[in-house]
Amino acid sequence: MDNLTKEKRSKIMSSIRSKNNLTTELRMASLLRKSSIKGWRRHLPLPGRPDFTWPKARLVLFIDGCFWHGCKKCYKPPKSNKAFWTDKIEKNQKRDRKKSRELKAKGWMVLRIRECDLANDRHAKNWIKKIKTIVGFS
Ligand SMILES: [Zn+2]
Image 1 (cartoon, rainbow, N blue to C red):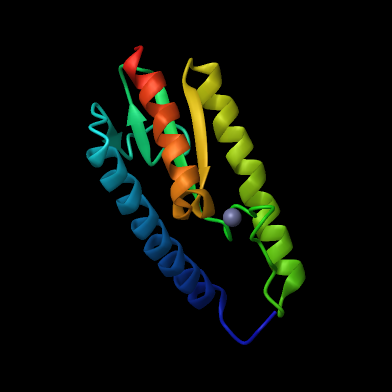
Image 2 (image 1 turned 45 degrees about the vertical axis):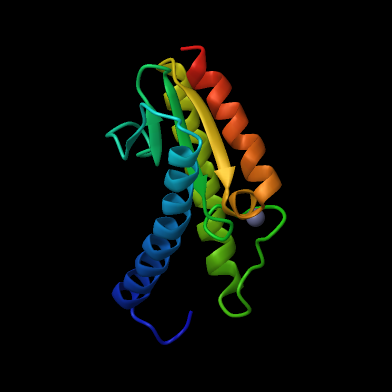
């Protein structure tokens, strides 16, 4: 452990989390608007509080930050407190899987887009196409 108190650390973590989320979520929202994809709501009170939800299509979409969700391609554990972070990220991934299962059990289709996929124009376009297909046929 480092010199930070538990409270201070959790404050820092939540500020990083919300800042990153905001940027990627705004990027997604702007892509959806540009592609004329409608019918979405943000942060509905469903399991895991999905970033975007299409209630009519029964579709939820999560934008997963590469660090917090342990992206296989991007995640690198910080140099200090490795054990703490490995444990933390593993717990996050476990929670992600649990929330996805809960949603699916309630009849929702669950999509998870990684932050790095959204940053890649070609990948982002493919995701938009996919969403359009799902939402279009609802
Ligand atoms: Zn990534």
